[in-house]
Length: 398
Image 1 (cartoon, rainbow, N blue to C red):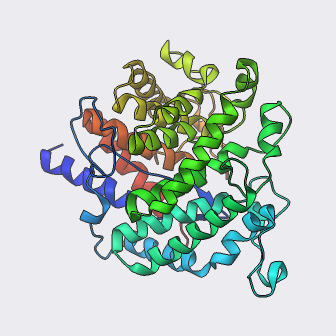
Image 2 (image 1 turned 60 degrees about the horizontal axis):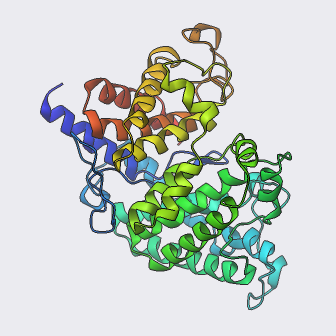
């Protein structure tokens, strides 16, 4: 591939990063937090120190021309703007008992359904996705409508955080879900849901210069540090067996923005030895593993390497990426069957209606972007192009 083609692929990475579709809710997608080497240099205190061969453009420096990508972005924009702020804050306000001043109170707001219903343990994560989507739409277009809506969401979340008055805790579900997770009781992925909120608020800081968002997410991080620094090693081992999304990625980003070592400690806390250590010894341990739980952990390791952490972080991420692409992926660039990896090189046994989880592809592309910055390898670029066009681009039904 020529140098011009490689630069075009970097542009395509930024374009994909500009589109508000990726891991998401109810068939509609919004990006979770994104920071890549070369971006936001005026907003981070801890710069990337690992050797890099390519750097990402800031999203404001790339504009989309008419294309199916633009059509997808416009459809997602319409959907995101159709969801009222009060609806997106409903479960948060319910959790904190904050309804004073809202005309009509609790019953005046149409409640979200599905994974956002009040009886679902994952409630609240969509608001985090929407914060990220609004941030990236604003960065891409400069249209104030996205910033104004995001500012209203952040203000509402700050009010809920203050009303909860729990050392910075903020969520649409009570803190006892975290306590149950730490105790090893059955609970549906509370850190996964919190990760979307950490990510969305961080994106608001990076892409929209929203300092209130940074204040809110820092309070959330202080709460997490106080909470997790007091649990035992055995409790930690049990807790992180539950899906926690890209918490390590989010905390490394917060560490880069602020330079505060407590956030680096939190990122390292979410290193999952049981999953990641076998990869260091070149063991393919993916069979039957939940892919959407697995892949974000490697993104965090790539981030660790970028800021000067040991090279074994890159070694693990490289081996994982090559193993997935060479032995666990379909010709489209997608992977998994019913969200789970299967035995290597057995793709032909898994051609079903549940083949190819889009969240997994989204996370693989995110990991690919980090690795491409490090190596600028044509194999990474080729995979990215294949998965982007053959899988992600068709995820919407016009």
